[in-house]
Image 1 (cartoon, rainbow, N blue to C red):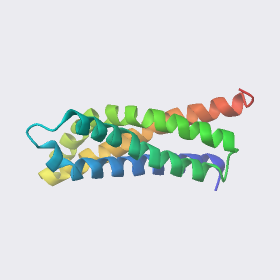
Image 2: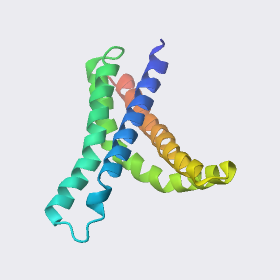
Image 3: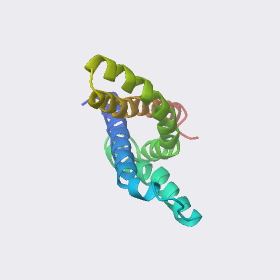
Image 4: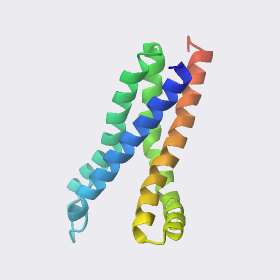
Length: 147
């Protein structure tokens, strides 16, 4: 496989891993989030877990996959950029997913398609944004390798 296609496939897969873990954590924590008054400490710990854990797992996976094609320094910098930017891309993708979900519900004529479209919208928008920043970081690292 060509290095460019391998790079984009790895970043998109890492983005899908992040989105899946993120959606799973949110779905599993619905009973906790619906409590009338959770403590501040547990809320802070939960928020840090939801923001850092999915991106950390995917960045570790991305680093392992990119080391096969790229030097260790490039793979590490790309994984660090991914772990820093993945929560931002999810924050941008979540509001946009409502638009995508509304269109898919209108096309599919059932609420189930709206939910599916919203989840797919989060995954697609997050993958596009993370691919963009990771490709930029990889380009910078290949252009200026000593930096």
